[in-house]
Image 1 (cartoon, rainbow, N blue to C red):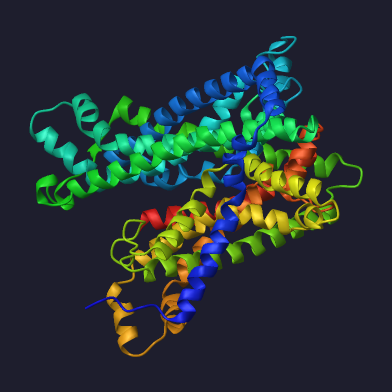
Image 2 (cartoon, rainbow, N blue to C red):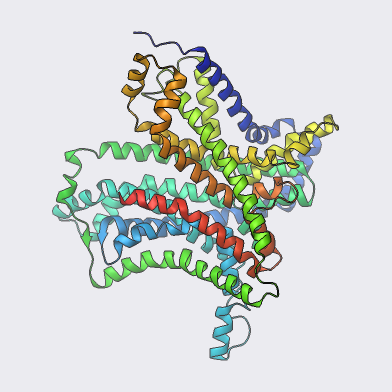
Length: 564
């Protein structure tokens, strides 16, 4: 039977969604094609950057990414292997506790450790008082090695989550089969567990590296010369949009390569998981048990899991709490509760608006993908049969790349065409709409975080059988009724999860908000950054602590889902 042709409302909705997705992708496409419009003067700017700052940006970004990648692979992979393959005291608690550093943004971690480890901080002061030592006891934490350590503590959960999921499926069974064949513990880890976890390890490291290269808060606060900080300096300090566009295009190229590597790793991960299904893969899960560790090995596994939780969440949270308490006791007028309420209101309004828009857009996009010919059973670009469906699916996939694009690149991609329009038509109100209202910010948030909501909705749709749609259509339900009366109630949790993830991501977002925010619209992240930049760390602790507490919500939901 030939496929049923879509009705006119669905066709109009697809056309509208295609235009909307292409509109959201314009900033990234503008940065990507900015090289095509370069003239001789622009190439001179690039040559000047190559002689002065480009080598420094590239070197520090390369060193930062290399050591962060090694660190998150060792820490996240080791913790995942310990939790998934072995039994030791506290393992069940570490299963969810190892996710807690995900709630701590890297720039907040930087503020906490700067106060704790600096010359006038509580640790050095106590050590000098007790030992009689003079001068600084260790180098300043605001350095490249300090940034590497903080990124590792903050981003290792990406690797931990993916590797633990990969090993939890068949890892114990395969390790047990290897033991029965006479393999020792070391050989089982190197020859069985490590090859199984390699695709997940590569995907997690790629995600951590994308977050590292996209960071602006730590790089700016620590005085690092990375691509992200260079873009900000070129645009807002030197007022050179050509240099900013060139740096943004180079950073976009690097992120694109990392995204390609991450997608390849995920494809290999799905292939490995599909091959391991079945009795031949190692038998029933109920017949195998995790390897129980004793003595020194159990202590080593416990320490491997406890150290990142303590250093990545417990200690910085305690430092922020201490700073808030000290500020409330020592300040002449106490904590700035009135301004804090205003910062919270601005952050909550922006985050809630972006979350509702992103969740609604993701629901419509996921429904359009499901209703595309072949999309319910296969999905993807190859399943689409005509050029309209191919254009829609391609536009949706281009939007799904937005989460990998750094916020500074998105800001440049938005401001670059705005500047060109203002030069061509000075009286056009586009600049006031983008930078004088929240319109530009919401545009950037949708481009950056719609992919997060879309992933949640696609996962929800994957649990709905195709027969549900067929039954509704046979009973005469239109596509509109199918979405509003059948799918929407069943996808309520997925929609709420998507909105919550976007809400928290917007609350923590810094670089795009710092560039595009209108006057008198500071968010908690911007306020914390400005106060820390002015060395007012005690005052920055209150908004930073609020960001962390909000960030705990999706982490707790994720840990609850993993325990089921």
